Amino acid sequence: MLQALLVAALFPLASRAEARRCKEEARQQVVGGVTPPVPPEYKSADFLQASFWKHRGKLDVAKERFTSYPGLSPDADPSLLVGWAGWNHVERAKALTAVITDRERDGWSGERIRPAVRGVFELLPWLRQWHADAPEGDYGEAYEAYLASLLPKAALTERELESWQPTVTSGRKRRKAETTTSHTADAKTMFDDAEDPQKTSLDEVPR
Image 1 (spheres, rainbow, N blue to C red):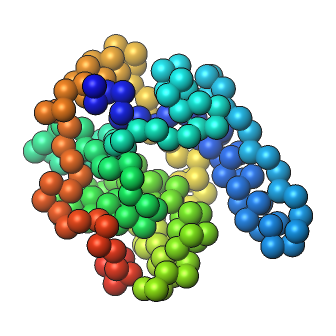
Image 2: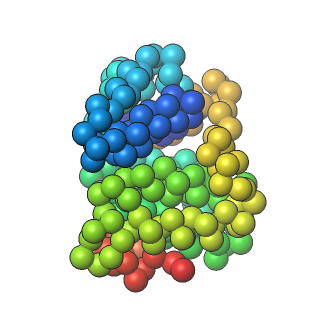
Image 3: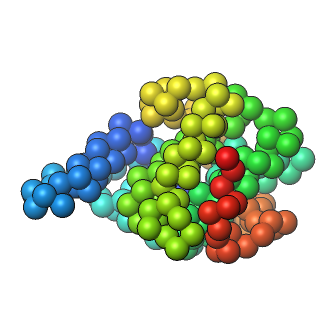
């Protein structure tokens, strides 16, 4: 069932922030030969649902075939927006860029566009680490500039974006939403009408 493959907003940002801090320290210390801190292991309580923890495990290892983007579907089509979990960090950033561009054309701004902006923010450490020396150029630097241009549109400062998290719906509403995602027909692929995100180019990062 598709429901078992779609996982979004898995755990509170406090846990992710601690893991991100450890990873950032590790990146900075590995060059100097210093032993980096060990990231924390996740517990069931760190996830919004116990089933998410059972699926991801204590090390938060992704096993989904798809990744979901709740709240980012166009107004004319409220079905859940999904992308392929096999995309690398540049491809995911490009996917979010395409969504942001489309929603801006639809007149979205402020609170509505914040989930996508937060998604770009989450990808930045990996773009800096793994895609700074790409043949096309430095994706980390390019998307850092792009994120800075998005902050005014999302009506957030960088510090506010760091602590921002989506509103969690009540249990009844969440169960209803999960029921709809259990049917493949209710999930819309992010790039039904867009270019293949695997064909990446630094020139396509908005300035």
